[in-house]
Image (cartoon, rainbow, N blue to C red):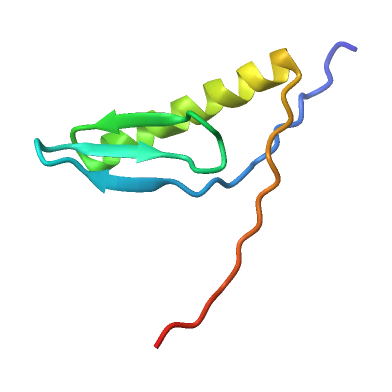
Length: 78
């Protein structure tokens, strides 16, 4: 239908930043198998993983792959 706005969904994904010995950061999304990236700075790594997540989700949709369920749990440490 013409004139209808397409709805966008916002999803939150946990990402893990790991400093590399040589410099820069390896970053990955544990919920999305194989979704990794790298950046020279934290900011660059975060931007690149956003793009990688978007591409992962796009490919999953095209291939009929379900997005894994995610849950957050809280634990108390001493």
